[in-house]
Each structure stands twice: as structure tokens, then as C-alpha cells.
Image (cartoon, rainbow, N blue to C red; front, side, top):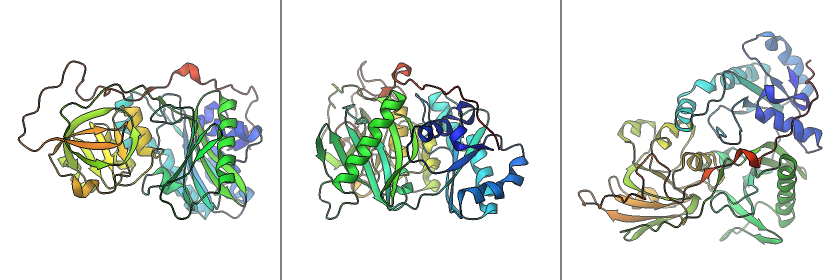
Length: 397
């Protein structure tokens, strides 16, 4: 086992990034890294190591070598356990996380991006922050690429923000200007907390030298950093106008830029997966990591709940497909086999035709799936991020 503060790149990017932030004075929950889960010696050390973190509960997270990289986040693809309280529960969670690099969703992500999590998955065990409010921040607007800090938050742990199972409150910091959530009676963050989060994000960005995707939690007045990784895509200008678009059927939040056309396919759960065909527009209440094989074949995705910083939105941007989230009535207004155009830059879905409608073939500048739609996000440039390494050798206990 390796104390988290001494982790390096051999422990995976997530652990190495957190170790660096710890050494720089950021509030990061105490923890340790199990680098090689196949070596059962960690089992005998686990109880003592957990005592060193306190009474729990604990968080168990992945830290694969290929995860949280400049061009591939593996957002949500590897397993996380929050709230384990006993040594036995942590041991089960560690093994589950370590083997999640070969799951169907991870395989689909790897096939689509051409990037692997690596031959083994290191595992981070940390004290779980009892968050009053938690969420995600980006130090760039992920859809437009504007130099803004975007913050999404909800009460309690941040798991529902990252997994897209709720629509979070959202703030945008643009220089000194602060845009607050619309139509919210009671916000979960004060203006002072929002600005503190923005400052934390900018400090982390300055440390790593590139725009950052940060998971955070606030407890007892402290901003805790749970994860920091490069933003994996950069928005491009969208000069593409949807042709032949008819009535706008659904409006939501722009979550992944670009436009794409396709037939609507309503998916309610795993049992509906066999109905989905490559090039369909995925429409659903929400997604989970198990849905990655569908995202990998979709022309676009539309969800009724979720934010622009959720795992599904990040993966959609990495796959280069348009996404619209928080489209409240998508599953009631849209119907199977409607021919639609999804505009992920503007956050709407418009009717092109109904089943049997003859559609004009796409022009040469409108590539068919699975090529990147016009206006879609592109991969970040490796040169944007200068991950300075620490020459210190990790100490092992």
C-alpha cells in the first residue's frame, strides 16, 4: 500500500493528481493506494490501514494508468463505491473496482476511443467526506469553450450529479460576473461558496497548466477536492445550420456541441438495448455507465435529467456526438422512429420527418455516423497540459 500523498504516475493519474494537490496544500481526503490488487498482501494490511483513516465511512475509487488522461477520461466507466463501513465491505469494493477495467462499458469506451485503461487498475481508498453539498466544476465552458468556470451542485454526496440521475443547480463565473441558477427558490450554494469553488478551480488549473474537470465537496466550511483531471475536449465553432428542420419538439440544456440527424429510439432500461441500432438518437430519462455501449453507437443523446458536467455528457463530448440534457418532457413528446435533428450546441430537438418520410441524403460536408458531427467537440491538445512530475520516490508502508 502507498500513502496517497506519495502516489505517483505508477499508481494511475487520479492518485498521482490527488497526491500532487495534497503536497500543494489543497484539502484532499486522507487515503492510500493499493497499486497491485492481485498481490493479496494488501488484504492483511487493510484493517490497520483503515484504522489510520478513522472510523469511516470510506470511498473506494479506481486509478487506472490510462484513466483521467488528457484525451480519455473514462468518466464513470470504472467502478466507485461510496459509504463502505467495514473492512470486509472495503475489501469487496476494492476487488470490484480492480476488475472493472474489463467491464462491457469499459470495453465499449475503449473500442470507440481507441484508448485502454491499462493492464491493471490501481485502487484508491479514502475517508468519505460527509458532504453538505457536492458536485463538479469545469474551468472552461465545455460546450462553447469560453474561458468560464462552470459549477454544478446538489445537496449531499455528488454521486447523483456525476451520474446524471438528477438535474443539478448550475453557476457560471465569467471574470467577476457570477450567473446564478434560474427559477430556483433556494440555492444549495452561497455566492461566497461559488466564488471559493471558482478560485479553487483556477488554482488547480494553474498548477496543472490546462483546463480542469474537478469533483469537489463542501463540509464544515472546507472545500474538499475529490478528483482533478484535464478537460478532454475543446469546443469548436458550430457554423452548421440544421437543414430541413421543422418544428422544435424539445428544448433542454446544450451538453455536447454539434448537430446530428437520426431516428428516435426510446430506451427505458437494459431490456430495451437490443432494439437500439447504430445511428439512432438515444432518448431516455437518464443514463448510467452500463449505457456506454449505446452511446458508442448513437448519433446523438437526449436525456430528461442530468447536467452538462455529468459522466454521460463528458463521454458524449469525447465520442463527438451531440447531447441535450435536462429536456424535461423528452420521453413523452418524442416517439420511436421520428426523424429528428439534435442540436447539442443550442439544446433543442427538431422534427425532420415521421416514419416513412423521404429524407434528402446528407451532403458531403455532413458526414454520416460514426464520424464527428459538424460543430462537435474535438480532443484536447496534449500540449495544453503540462503534468509536471515529482521526482520523489513513493514511500510504501
